[in-house]
Amino acid sequence: MPPGGWFSRHKPESDLPEGLWSKCERCERIVFVRDLERNLKVCPHCDYHHRLTAWERIEMLTEPGSFSEWDADLRSSDPLGFPEYPEKLEKDRQKTGLTDAAVSGCGSIGAHRVSMGLTDFRFRAGAMNSVVGERLTRAVERAVDERLPVLLVSGTGGGASMYEGILSLMQMPKTSVALARHHDLGLLFISLLTDPTMAGVYASWASLGDLTLAEPGATIGFTGSRVSKQAQAHVGRRPANYQTAEFQQDRGMVDRVVPRKDLKATLEKLLDWTA
Ligand SMILES: [Zn+2]
Image (cartoon, rainbow, N blue to C red; front, side, top):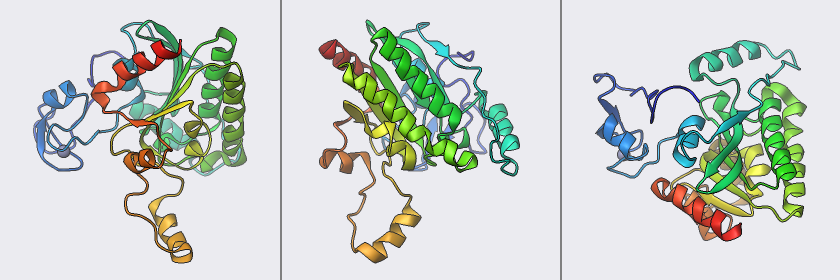
């Protein structure tokens, strides 16, 4: 785990003194970084749930010191020779300290060992390439071998990464088949949808949870707003705010929208009940 405590890597995007203040991305009010951190990066004014990094999420959900990372040595190749893809990967590695857009490993939530995989929006918008798919698949396969519950946390704007073409698309059935094997053993898979969960990620592993939780206000859907506006011209009206966690909960696609402060306790309870 990277050094430092809660959100030690947070950099407020404003011209105010760094480390003291931050501006809420939604209500644009100024908040003390310290208050934001204490509130798990949820705006105390408007309840906006700012995005967490994969490691912040791990720190928030698992018992201290219990998480051990898997498959950190996996690296994406450049199968299509896509212009500037290796440079973009390297830039995001430098920016985030991650090796790719997902972190996987095993950690304890309460008394339960859980196999976990989490995407990180800061790295290529959390898009699923071959490394992301492989890390998540291996996490599920280890859970099958060791009879562990699985928690996958999604946060991607891009779905399957276009930079790796069909290899990215292949991660959709690959992760889904691994989860089907896990499901057939009667093991628990909890999917936690965070802002945003879109496209090929939502259309594969993120929507396959035995239990599906979401953070308040998270954007959840298949197509982005530009495509869905074009589709609207052909299929007629669409409801307002239909790509939100709350709308999806009302329609039964999400079991429960859980405020961030309640997430760990909720997961512990669910794991207790299903153990
Ligand atoms: Zn706010």
